[in-house]
Image (tube, rainbow, N blue to C red; front, side, top):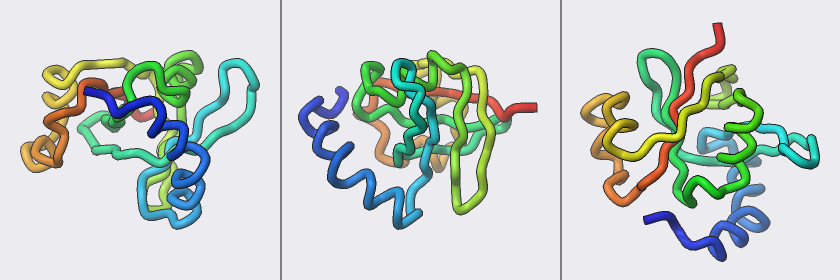
Length: 122
């Protein structure tokens, strides 16, 4: 079940800017589909053979999810390295977790319903 929308609003304004500043978490950089502004959102991300699985804890209605899907691309910064990603696909847990290593599958994702799978840009 996605986290509640009210929590997303608090995180977006209070906690996310601090998390981005600290650089401790993966950060997806995306372009607003209406504003055209650039946004940075901290999230959980796991490497795959072809790209990354991004965890959409607030569900498919999250701004960052809708922006990435609309743009068809995003940049993911992990440990100070930028990864250009393309071809976002919104998947449920059964299909998304197939892309992860066995150790990543057990990373507290049992209640997450929505994931974005993206490939490295060639």
